[in-house]
Image 1 (tube, helix red, strand yellow):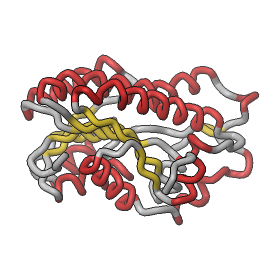
Image 2 (cartoon, rainbow, N blue to C red):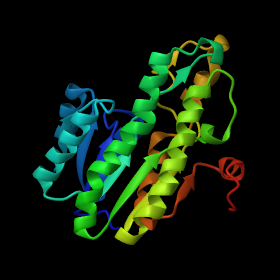
Image 3 (spheres, rainbow, N blue to C red):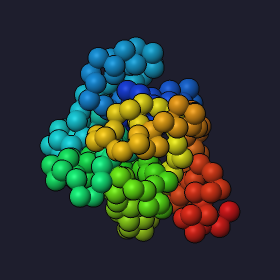
Length: 242
């Protein structure tokens, strides 16, 4: 899919990978709907990005997610792409998992993207196609003590994404996934829980730049392959040939 003059929704657009993706899409001539919980941050960002639309939404509030996407479609008259980026980590031992937090993480990391996909599919189908890019994680292929909830949510997203890709192929709606490695964002600091020893968050500041991940997202939109990996190590862990 071409990017210029097309309409894209980016969730979690107020910071990190979402912010870099929104900027990159705008720089390439797209119109971008900015979705996140932080209304003030979105308003400030919208002033920097010509043609953008800030929409405040909590991705765990499914009614509000559907309303937000209806707002985007009503404003632009179409939706060509969806980047499901919003997500959060949770670090704790299995014996200490809080069921309420577990539920919140799965609502945000798995059900939120599914509901957003459901909301954009009819418009994309009517237009004759579209692009959906789900931001996954290399942890989907790893076993990391203290991070079982997060990694299992990403494995679930993997399964849903591949199924949706097969189901929507006939409608020319392409579903792709991005697998970042550690990325230099606030993601580690914003995690829920408090793992013993601090976990991998200490490495976030030295991780890949969010602009690099944004470049993979734009590549996925343009090329439409199923999976894009930040490095060869993740590709090998996933069992995908280079």
